[in-house]
Image 1 (cartoon, one colour):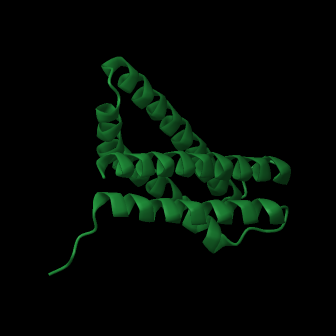
Image 2 (image 1 turned 90 degrees about the vertical axis):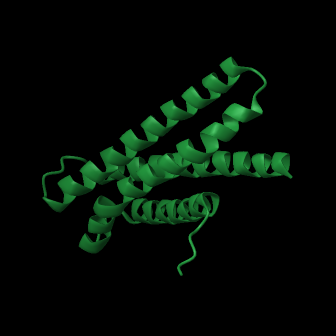
Length: 147
């Protein structure tokens, strides 16, 4: 029998994976304009967007209902959730942009300078780190409330 991971534990694991990707993005940005290894590029293109999508699905399935239950006012909960949905869409769009950049780099069709690519990498890493911190704090508050 295989033990299944709780959704909350899976979300925490995915946050750790995303934080590791942030470290990779920062390191890549720091070493540009050096050549980016094809395997790293392939890994970003193949896995980063899927990870972001999985994190967002877990958050929507498990954090959004908890947020809705924490507010005494339905309108306040809707506003908080809608703001998070918009943030997630911006995160996804920025991740898709980065994946596209790496696709263009791999096919030698990128017209972006290394400074622009570094800025994009750092910006996404910073955005993702803020997201992780905010949602981790929310999970901590929800745990304390449940205790």
